[in-house]
Length: 103
Image (tube, rainbow, N blue to C red):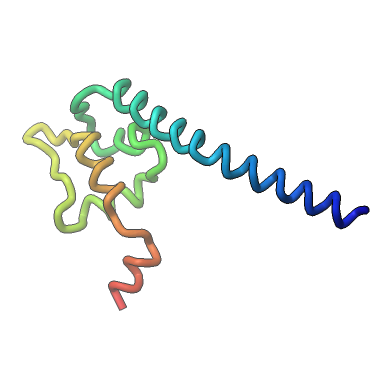
């Protein structure tokens, strides 16, 4: 009986996972919309304040990233566009892909 019960439990678990996946995708999509509405259109901050605004990027990584070709540059007042920096960082290849490209 144990094998049959396990098979049924696995089938139910797989069915639930398949049913929940589209809902998780919808929630992620809605979360992005809400976050984009909460952000000012083009907030501009000093480089030292960018990590706090971007959330998941440390200052060291940010400085290396801003040194890359095509990275957003500060305006005449030395302020960076948070939106431009987020877009640039999101479009960077993963670390493993960039290491392969260097070799």
